[in-house]
Image (cartoon, rainbow, N blue to C red; front, side, top):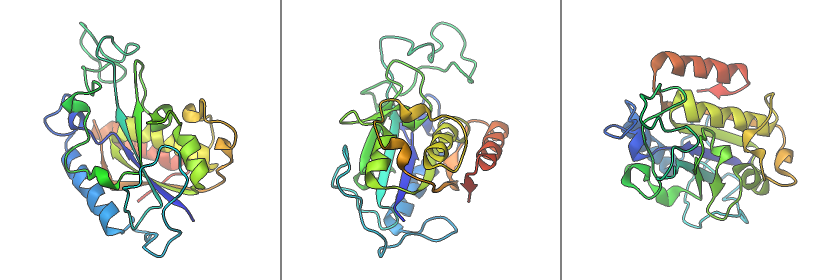
Length: 239
């Protein structure tokens, strides 16, 4: 089994004190770092140091990752343009509805777009940027530093099991987890992030997708609960 951890949008603007800060965001950042350093993976047991080993030959991957629990660690960030409304994602002069329009957040190159300082970025193998001039919720809509899609990165690494953590449960975690289960063949529906993935991206094979419930934080309690129910219905295990 080749296991990947997908870390969704653990950024300053999505944690306490940020432009769209959620309660518990900083704790999620600390918990993810502890998880990746410590090697314990949820309640079903981890890959451990005796697993398949670090994924090699992954385009866009750094050599700094040192996770005992995962063969590959991928982290996304919103990386919005400063000079436009990013396809209507920013509310502009109108009041945001906090459903499809939002206050300005995670502008490329700003402190708000940086990873939260409690997230140890030395543990990340692949960095993904999304929302560059457009709305983008799933990390599968983004690109790595070398322009690869996440679907291609996972396929090249032979990933067959994915854990998803991060912010926010009811938006970007939800979208990323649903795309992951579609990619791994355990769910139904199309994969938004398959754009430009190339041959073989859909051939990752059937696998398991989990959301680690202690390591996600949502915008709204009701919509977060609904999102978790939707994920379960799609074949995602919430632990």
